[in-house]
Image (cartoon, rainbow, N blue to C red; front, side, top):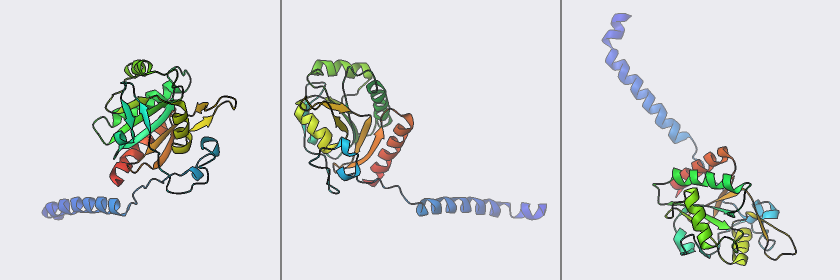
Length: 222
């Protein structure tokens, strides 16, 4: 037996290597690729969706927008054209879930620091309070990289409508105050075609890992 193994050692090594490579390639080819769903208003909790769009079950996209970022630059849909991005809603003085969400958004930012195709976008739900200087100070404190991540402020009505009609991620506040908003922990993943591809709990580390994996999956898909 020993003489047999010695005589055919090279052949056996080649056979083992070939078998390993063949099985690995076969597994990759046969394993179905993950495809993220396209989310529409009818798929989401009605509390987070404006009543005028709750019935929409397909072809939903993020509407055009125009806000101002932490550097005083006007940010529009053009700045995110052809990009995969993560959007959320916050305010700078929030002491509950916002610091956790921002910390986790920084982790997402850093995971794709060298990928220009991936960006982030955070909207203030208290635009009258979160002025450009306030957003800039917050950005510097939290480690926001300007080329990757815009913190935006603007007309409160416009932010309200895009939150509830486009991103489907904000609850209404007090009925007596027009356009009052209560942001949630949701981070929203948007693809290059302006479609929502997922919602993630921005306060949970495990959800951030899922988000990062889904962004990578989406990058391969597109």
